[in-house]
Length: 279
Image 1 (tube, rainbow, N blue to C red):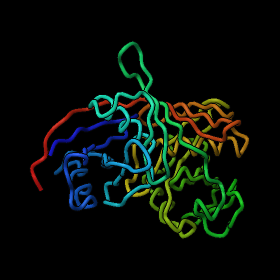
Image 2: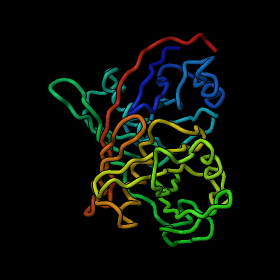
Image 3: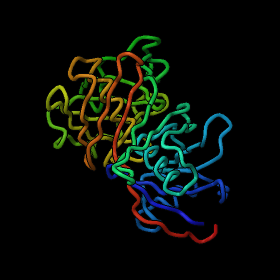
């Protein structure tokens, strides 16, 4: 089976084209292939499938085999793969995901793709839709969350997948490896959660580190960057257009007031291609 490995701000993926090849068990495949010692190594796998409601369908499986609804860095890599592999000649097209149909648009410098801008749709802010227990239809903004005996102020957003944004004084020094799992598995989050630890530099620039649900610490999270931008507006900390500095690079995110849609722009780079033995 042929595969390609991609990365967006260091968030890396093994991409397989299931318009051609078939995998019987995506969960087991993801666990095996994502292993950084015995497999290819990645934060997750991206699967190209046909769609009846969009140009293509993207599925995402984490390193633990769980399926994610959406992945912001992943959809940029997915979009560039489709174009570079001549599966489409469109510069803007639709992709069915677990978070709905999203629209990536390729950005060019001359004839070369320099990045991808994605219309990530509208953020979901109602507590029971994110979901966060105990908030029903209310927004979850600067609400108390107790983790390992310490109180934090959480602001929660769904970009088709759940996020909990925590503002900290020092993102670099925050003990994310020690505490990340406790946030992910906190009983307040019935479907677990991704957690962003955010230090505000100024109204247009934040430093963010992320613990991803099902993948632990990663170098970047696209949907998490979008959730961080939305949370910044909801808490009055940042403007609607913000640069999100991640461990692996920088994304630009804008929450458009007129359309209520969130737009994310960033890189998508091929790392290498290869072939896996038949399974």
